[in-house]
Image (tube, rainbow, N blue to C red; front, side, top):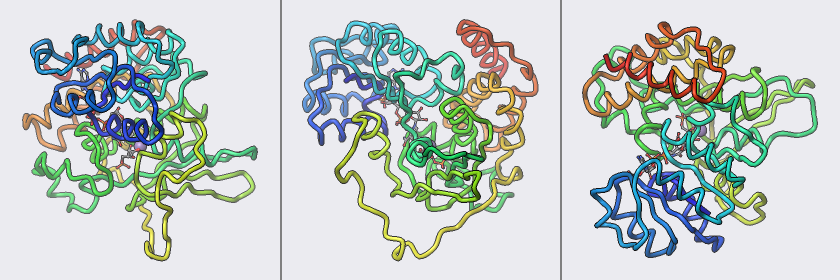
Length: 355
Ligand SMILES: NC(=O)C1=CN([C@@H]2O[C@H](COP(=O)(O)OP(=O)(O)OC[C@H]3O[C@@H](n4cnc5c(N)ncnc54)[C@H](OP(=O)(O)O)[C@@H]3O)[C@@H](O)[C@H]2O)C=CC1
Ligand SMILES: CC(=O)[C@@H](O)[C@H](O)COP(=O)(O)O
Ligand SMILES: [Mn+2]
């Protein structure tokens, strides 16, 4: 397989599964964590390696290394591997997703931004999403009439902070996710609840419905629920680890233990909360975005600019949703009729948010 983003949280979990099931890894793509990449090269002996920057090539212990976005696309095209795990973060992941599909490879897609911005153009016939909530929904699906689907949110780093403290929280505090160990960008997206907005859009494209909602479950043990027409609700419960969704995405069928089962007696209780707009201002536009999913392009671009500014200490935490809502207000009627429109609008929104 080809692993894009091998040094990230999903990438590392993917390689753990590859090791456990003795799967071959033909291509590794990473950014700047060359130390970890070299360890992965030693362990998996890939034929090809791609990194972000030319200046780091000499540090990589491999004789076939290239760099940059175009090189990622070429590596996908030139490889005989049948599967691409896309664990890149952000808009950067879209072109590799499209390239992998074009090359007829199976796509195991953690890069949810691909679906957020381009869901209506993505052929899903050979694609499986890697996301705990969508894995949960898929696991619960059965041949019965569904009323609605619900995904859960942890509430993120600040779910228990007094509202008046949010203005001055630090990057370090924001990166302290209560339940999951993930990359920086998605951890901030969890704290603002933008991750859940992305996941509603992701679910819209994956399950072809807008009867979707999200609630907070503070322990991240329930990942998804389905309300059936007959009045029953089923819930997917599993320990908070991405190894199970990744194993299914890669292997298709899993019959051995990947995670330790949940012990409800030890857990003793679960707590559910409504997602409040006062704490998560982005939630104001939930219905609008679901009704007009082209807004995903605006939401994603503005959010990427804002999160990067926050992580670089240029703005405060509350400014992230201000920037995003401002962009949604400005670009409120996007007209996306082809993939090219996505790249044009993405650029316009970024330059608006940067100015
Ligand atoms: N983490 C999780 O549990 C979950 C993540 N997701 C989604 O999966 C995706 C990945 O998330 P996560 O693993 O947490 O993110 P990380 O930030 O941990 O990993 C991102 C990966 O992309 C690489 N990368 C970044 N920029 C470049 C570049 N310019 N060229 C090549 N490689 C690059 C990084 O390399 P390096 O580190 O070497 O710089 C790293 O390997 C995101 O879309 C996220 O929303 C979805 C569900 C759960
Ligand atoms: C592990 C996973 O799927 C993440 O998307 C997770 O859901 C993020 O946590 P939040 O529920 O806090 O957004
Ligand atoms: Mn998720």
